[in-house]
Length: 179
Image (spheres, helix red, strand yellow):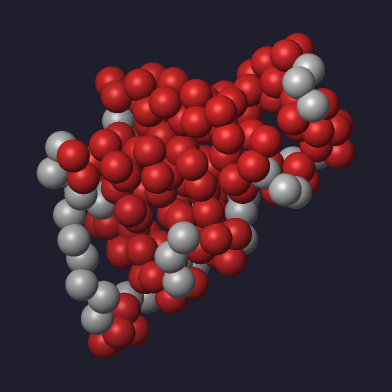
């Protein structure tokens, strides 16, 4: 999901002090941000993370030099706020990247459906880092390069998190089918 030209104009107007434009921009980005942060921290904490994210966006909007990059910038802020919360709660597992293990993970024949992702992304079996990549890539339809920029991690890290996340999704789907 990219910043539309209309949204970029509203961002410019908001940067010039137009309160209605600021409210419109925040309303437009709120649903996808909430969906994204709920995948990382869970539904119970998503509202707090979203509120903190929107406050930061409102305070720092004037620092954004390229209004057309607003959506990516907003997702980056949301990711940082969500991961900061997980670090404070000590819920962020650390995964060591091992290229040999990643090479052994088979690529999916087809990406999971939106419904399957929505149901399975809430699982605690998938790391928050992998859930963030899966949500941005499949639900928000961002390229892996865009996901890397938003999460401020190398492209290789995004690919490994995607691989781990897809592996966990496949395992969960296999477990559900065997029931």
